[in-house]
Amino acid sequence: MGMTMKSGGRRGRRRHIQRHQPMSEINVTPFVDVMLVLLIIFMVAAPLMTSGIPLDLPSVKGKQLAAPKTQPVVVSVGKDGQVFLGEERKRAIKLDELGAKLQAVAKSRGGKDEAIFVRGDKAVSYGHVAQVMARIKAAGFSKLSLVTELESGG
Image 1 (tube, rainbow, N blue to C red):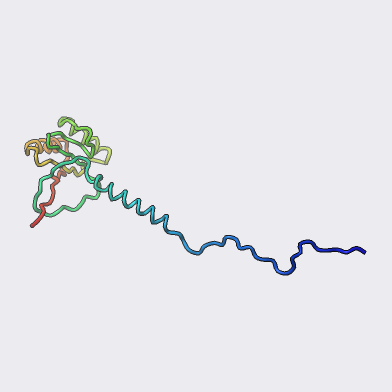
Image 2: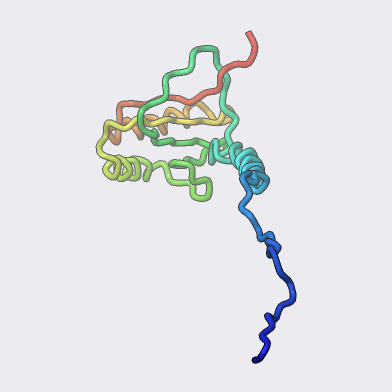
């Protein structure tokens, strides 16, 4: 003879508590931020990667040659007559060492069939550039190219 009562007091429907529902949009703001930062970094870094040794190349009229399939070996002659191999501007090499160093580079890259680009500052004498080219030829390399800038204007 007892009486039972339900505790809780509320009857009927329960209210649905709304939880976090997944969004159907993608937030692209962080992506755009990262892309803008990368764009700025590459815009600043690209001019610095063009050439390692600053030279004032002579200007000539003519057509630009087609780029070689592999990266050529670059020999640079500065306006003070110093010779640099590759893009290292920290260490000049002696003219007597040029042939041996070029042969070592060619051996590591696969032979003497390497294209060698000679960059000479326009303030350096023609005789000094000719000496550098003669040393390269004496080391057994036959594909020599002089690097110049195209003349601006007509």
